[in-house]
Image 1 (cartoon, rainbow, N blue to C red):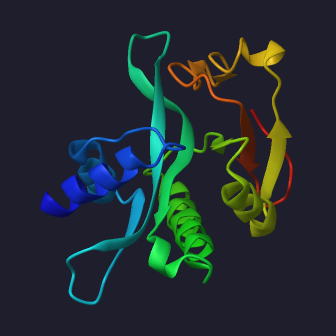
Image 2 (cartoon, one colour):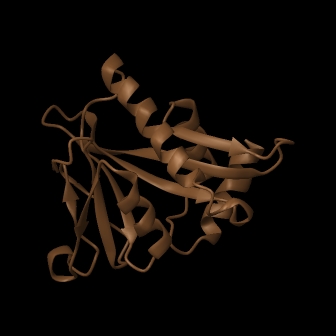
Image 3 (cartoon, one colour):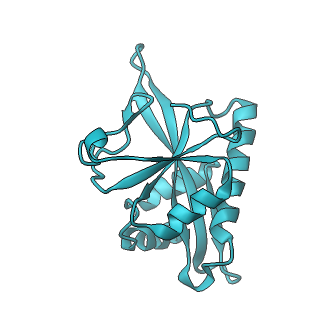
Length: 175
């Protein structure tokens, strides 16, 4: 778990990302919902992305996945600008599609939240293909503290001006 501790500290230091615990990162990796690239000596994480399930309670009182958020996309500053983030996201979406096909993950909306001032991330998602941009206003999100997807408030505790990107390889938004 040492690597996930290092990665958690790195993510915590990025002001445009929500903090993620080492345990959450490890759980994502074990569930096949994360991609991690290490340096050649396997000491330093140089690239990471994960898909985080958003849970809600259904009518039977069971916890079920309501949506999936692609987030925690990190690339070491020394290797930024070479397309590594795009590679991470494409690999993760490809893995997720295989999990959909196997039935191990339900087909629910896949989205990414990007802080409106994070120009590199906005450009990344705009250039990926298959992602539809939805700018949001403070009025429709209660000052970026409320935005519901599949019965889950994905902006709880967030409060930052943001843009939502919806994944749909056919460029049709579904929520």
